[in-house]
Image (cartoon, rainbow, N blue to C red; front, side, top):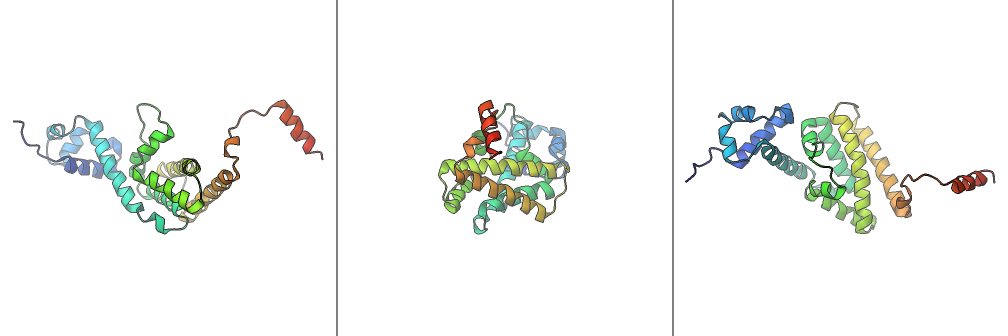
Length: 213
């Protein structure tokens, strides 16, 4: 009969997350984690296969914390913007958690649908709220979520990496502008026309003629 694990998965994951909060993912090594637990590294691997699994367990805990901090977002107006504000707030005040949640490199590139699946239940909650508040189809709501999330991620990355320093008012303004523009574009039915395809010569000529009338 195998020996009883010295620590539970929850205890190890919680200790790993505490280490990441203060020292970043780079600080999470088997030796450091064992020391944090007051032990050698050996008990960790009676519960987890490797350190990548430990990091994933810590991320799962961090994601639940993020969801808990955003769970009342539906009470705000606009509701979806509140999630973006919370996301960028993490980047400003908890940069290591932001990096763990949103900036970890995957072994292979992900589609946005795959990425949504890793964002937890809050992504689907956002899509439902967008449909409710803006009378959009599910397809339109998912498109809006994707467009605004990409912009929010970029803003958060700038803050988390200390590339830029924005006030809360500036963050709210920038997110509001992106959100309003995306809503108008999708509502216009022209979102699919913004693919950046080269303009044909005939279209250039027509545009030139129009500018002279």
